Amino acid sequence: MGETVRLKAGESVPAYRTGLVAVLDIGSTKTVCLIARCEPGSIKVLGAALRESRGLRSGTVMEMTAAEESIRDCVAAAENLADARLQNVLISVNCGSPTTVTSRTAIPLPEGVAVNDEVLRHLLSEGRARCQLEGHVVIQSMPTSYVVDDSFGVRDPSGMVGQRIGVTMHGVAVKPTPLSNLRLAVERGHLKVAASLFAPYASGLSVLTDDEKQLGATIIDMGGGCTSIAVFMEGHLVHADMVPIGGQAVTNDIAVMLAAPLAAAERAKVLYGAALGDLESGADVVSIPQMGEENEEGDLRVPRSMLTRIIQARLEETFSEVHKRLRESGFDVAAGRRLVLTGGASQLAGARELAGRVLNKQVRVGRPRPQAGLPASSAGPDYATAVGLLMAGATMPPEVLNPELQSQQAENGTKGWLSRLTGGLIG
Image (cartoon, rainbow, N blue to C red; front, side):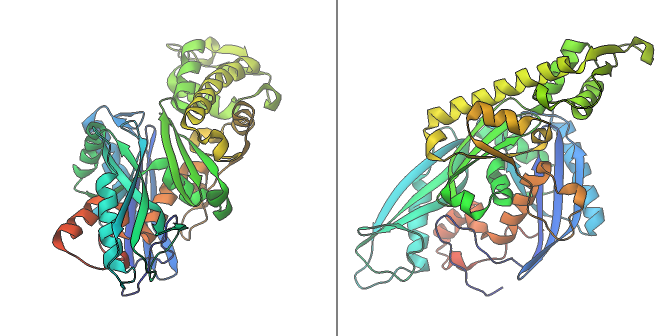
């Protein structure tokens, strides 16, 4: 509780806070709630629940009551498993057209005074004040590098002396209305949103290796309603974006083109679908139930290659749009050739190979790091964001996760914020 941990640029704090941490990954097709007990050096999942999301599209609340009920149901299931009642949660965000914002700030150093927590608090307060975008709300902002006089790229300036100290801050900003509605859907379940993180950033925390984060890697989080992009370089997030096409679009295409009910289209996609024809296996002909038909006699029998062509067309469109966004951002080449797929839609056969062809990168499917108490069934790419949220909530100081806390402390004159490990996210 009293341990002092300093935040280096591009690093998360390596110690675990003591107490309960609760997280909600609210997607368009599924909601995941994890509750864990953290102790120094360890973290154990006590409750894990997954429920079908309702009332959301592309990560945005479209029907408040339905969204609230699905979130309540998921949280209640996790609470029952953990034998705990939550007050605060850390949530993932994909809504509101996420975009990146960068700021650079410098302040003078008093003569003979070494950089300490008070200096850093003032510097980061100035940095966060500049890390803004008109018409948007910043949901996360973190230091990416420091400079002390002519020493650039400093990761931890604590104890250094000089005349000026500067910081480069990187943040993710979203439009306020979708964020407010998402938070409201959670808060109507008698929970407080302690902090929010961009979903693929959280995924990166759980699936990327240290080398990938340092040397450059791109996360493509393939959710049900949207496909999110996060680029990591030199240990930190440098770019964020979102394409409003997800795995549900593939299901809809199958349903429309084959006149199938949505449930049957989803089943056909999961059981028989492939993104590339050379990866097809099993039956050559697939039986697809038809809308309005009550028995199997009305099923449509189609070549499996037809199902593959439908899936491949939509995924090619998705990956092509991702490629376009990366080129326009300037990070397509700069971030290197490593690409990591996460999210439920990434598990579709051939998705990895197709992504490699379209984006011309080395691709792997990312699975979250094992966590004590987390069932094996919850160790797939579709849990990457939830596990990443848990890791962030268990390690990062609340002021780093929630810029509002840091601003409040600056107004109140609170000192030593980099040393605080308890508060904000305790369930």
